[in-house]
Length: 274
Image 1 (spheres, rainbow, N blue to C red):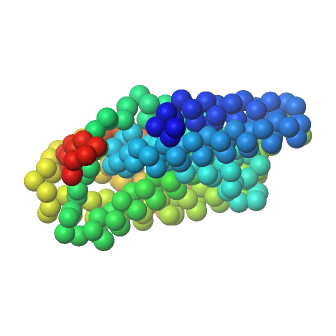
Image 2 (tube, rainbow, N blue to C red):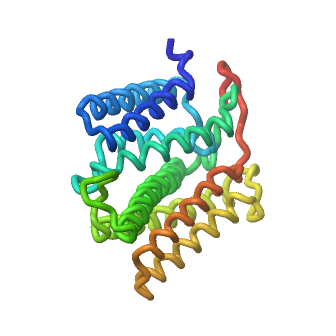
């Protein structure tokens, strides 16, 4: 039964939930809201069962995007703070669907792909993974808040009539949220990057070196964040400029996640020891 679950199953559930949320903006009936939550919950349960059965590798783009979409689907249900919870759902599901589409395009391998950055330092390896996964989650949430900030700024410039269309929190609230997510993203990314490079360079022979495209792109992303924080705290950059820079950083993050991992995977069949 579980082996029949595919990306199409929970992807379709999320898509229906997004359509119902859009209907809710025009026709705010209680049925639309309840049905949207129901389809999201059904999609989340199906995706959880799929991931538990397939156990995709998080260092592969397929598993990475799948896991990130799963976390954001949970964010959709529990919401991010009481002030922005009412509007974050309409921005979260499109990103979830984009991540699932990227996972579907990249595809999941039939064989099991296992990466070993270090068999001798499991704690350091775990901290490396936690740092990168944690930074990707906080960056994704910062991206969502940046999109809401730009949308709210457009509403104010176009003299949006209060009470009509999408209800968004104030620019001040969104900017505070963006700053908080950035404050967590950079140190987590730094920890994950430093530990990953150290483990890769000192560990397995499969390490492809400093010329690997993913390593180079990740260093560029780290430098981009360092410059972003410098502009924010040094020059006081804020508002639309800050939101656009976060969107650009998120796009670069997607590029990094798509590129191949610097440690070659070990292939094994369902009955083999990796």
